[in-house]
Amino acid sequence: MTISVHTNSAALTALQQLNQTNSELDKVQSRINTGLKVAGAKDNAAVFAVAQNLRADVGAYGAVKTSLDRAASIGNVALSAGKAISDLLIEMRAKATAATETSIDTFTRKAFDSDFKSIISQISTILANASFDGANILDSSNSPGIEFLADADGTRTLTLKTQNMSFGGSIITLSATASLGTVTLAKAAVSAVKTSLDNVNQALANLGSDVKKIEAHSTFVTKLTDSLNVGVGNLVDADLAAESAKLQALQVQQQLGAQALGIANSRPQIILSLFRGG
Image (cartoon, rainbow, N blue to C red; front, side, top):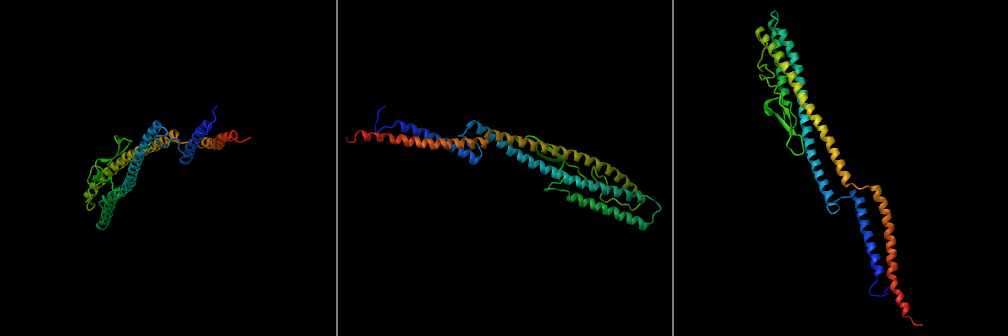
């Protein structure tokens, strides 16, 4: 092998090996710092592209979950209000039935009528306040219903159908001006309240079914999002236990490489002994 002060092949080889070790060490340190084995496209272009698409799906399903949570809240508020209305209709039926008795005096009839109209006012107040985030499905403001996101592409929806409980409608057939002022009016009120109560209870059943369906889909979306997050993790997350062991090995290699390079760099000094005087 030629001994030269211009070219030291051993030093070049040692330097290349040390640079490679340093490069691997930088990769391991990056994985430890970020927790990712694929942090960008240059790490693994194909895996990074797949992971980014999955992250986009996770973000979209987050929007779906928010929409479904809002739907469930709107529905639950409506259910609570509807239950209160049903209870008040039961009370109204009792008062209307009592007012059909022909033997009661004028004072008592007026008392029944006053209580009856007071309950009508309470129901009107409940209907006006049965809203969440500006949405009310117990009046005509959102007829026939409100659609909410069901998938990440925004192509499918779930509908929370309106159950319009306004007075004089298809559910509460009782008029807002109903009275118990006479026996005839009281009998008409009994019939209207009975029909309205049956309709309200059926509307609550329908609304409960819609809310249950929305909550079930919300649970599915949560589980699907968790699965997607796990999938992304399987693709890009670093095995920190393995990286820690690799870090230790590379640090040793780095130290040995530095020593090897130092030895290789000192080899041309042999030339000095060849020209030293005898």
